Amino acid sequence: MIVLRCPPDVGSVDVNQYGRRAQQHWQEFRPGRIAEIDDPEAFFTELGADVQDEVRIRWTAERVTAPAPAGESFLERAGRLQQLRYDAEGEVLRELVLLPAEDDVDLADDPHLTEAEVAEEQWREQHLHDLLAGRSRPGDFSAAERERLRAGAVPRLLELTGLSDEALARQGLL
Image 1 (cartoon, one colour):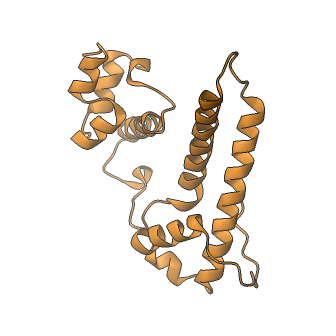
Image 2 (image 1 turned 90 degrees about the horizontal axis):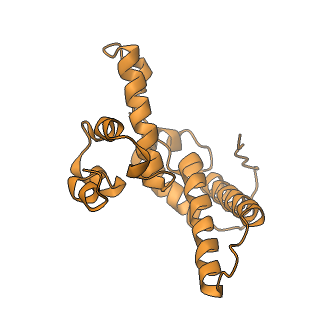
């Protein structure tokens, strides 16, 4: 668990890119939460520093544990390491910065959904996130599972996840 710390005096440190991104996201999607913060500038300065530190920690851990393929060229290594950094950054941003909107409703709290429907929506959401993050591919799922994932999804989401008719046809999955 990551704990956000916000000391009373952060000095003259400026808000970094992550803090600015959080502030912009929260202004749009979490304005009530911003209103509850005593010193937003200090909070987002510290949040940005925390995000930067966490990205660095995760990226370093991945670089140390991920073995370099034999015969890897300099450019291949640079690309692989950059991808590891993007992956670490994406995880941390999802966890600390790009939080759900205040008005998002938890599926489990909807009295009109059965437990099976909630479980289905949670399954679909998790796997769509994995596809978007590159942790899985459409070919990792059976044809029936791909149809479950496609159910009710907007065309743009299908394109981004590789689940559109065109993308599946190109992969020989349709």
